[in-house]
Amino acid sequence: MGMILSRRTVLRGVGTTVALPVLEAMLPATAVAAPKKASGRLPLRMAFLYSPNGMHMPDWTPSSEGSSFTVPWILEPLADLRGHWSVLTGLAHRKANANGDGGGDHARAMTTFLTGVQARKTSGADIHAGVSADQIAAQAIGKRTRLPSLEIGAEAGGQSGSCDSGYSCAYSSTISWRSETQPVPKETDPRLIFERLFENGRPEESESARARRAVVSRSVLDFVLEDAKRLDKSLGVADQRKLEEYLSSVRELERRIERSNRNTGGLGIQKPEEMPETYQEHLRLLADLLVVAFQTDQTRLATFVFANEGSNRNYSFIGVPEGHHELSHHGNDPVKHEKLRKINRFHVEQLAYLLGRLRGVKEGDGTLLDRCMIAYGSGMGDSNRHDHEDLPLLLAGWGGGTLTPGRHVRFKKGTPAANLHVAMLHRLGVAVESIGDSSGMLEEI
Image (cartoon, rainbow, N blue to C red; front, top):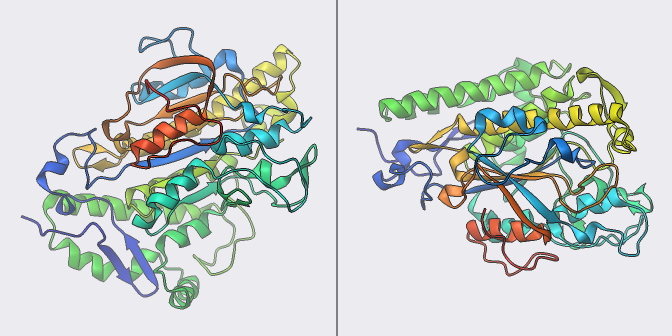
């Protein structure tokens, strides 16, 4: 029989700390009894994923409600995960409408997505919105983990200047807001995120270790092998296997980050000169880093932005050489419709990759996906109209048994999307009364 371990057990080496996944040795017998049920020893996690420029709604929205709906074309990449996600129709962000402020739907869409608040129209330093749902949670439960929250994305964005009809670039590149005037910039560099997850918390020692790894091209795992061998001898067979699989996945992730960048100096101290060579590899590296962060309970809260609002990135690799934003103004052109929905489906393929990775991580007698709430969508509905009604929103995971996925749920038109965020926070034990323009707590999720 294996030893009893603290949930905070880590592997330590010179300048490196490697957090561990949940092992059976960390859990009382009652914590592994029911796969999808909440447990005080198995934490819930929450993440918000953002896709810009709205959606081609006819290929997103199921034609029928309930659990027997036909999966629409854009959502087909999620077919193998059916039963683990629900489509939520009818939710709106009316504070993202102009409401007298004129143009700027892209900036408002992203800012309002998690705040439910009307952004102040300015391109200066006097930006003003609201505290986002993830940061409300971080303020309440963030102290329970090493990182209160994790903000990542595949497209950098400025925090000043004008990006959309007189709105600051901070609005169209940020969905996480720590306060009404303080957006939380996202990290886009996988190498820096990796370092953040595996540093030992002592900056001067960690810098030295990173420089040492750069010289000898060694993995972070090389610095904790002795500690890993010591721990392995004390574990049961199942935990030994799980530890080996986890450390192998960390090493492979590290190698993929190295291969994705032309800088061959190992995990060095300098910021790399280039991002991953392909957009898909960038998104998948970020997804894998998010999984590791949740798996090791380094954070329970995250935001993941696939691209900034108003992004005009081209998708030549899937046969769409035009810019995304350009195509979003499709004017009901069927040729543009076809290209826009290809982009939408590509993004859903990346969502499917993340959910599949979460489902592949065993935790207790269930999976990591069982104990997650993953909200995916956009702050804009119909791409051409640039409206904020009937938003494309999807909720995945079981929330520790507090969610009932596998359905298409249609809510009364105009129901504030912030009601969803209130409901998610309550499931985390964060009993907020309201967020932005919420009118209550969303039921039937």
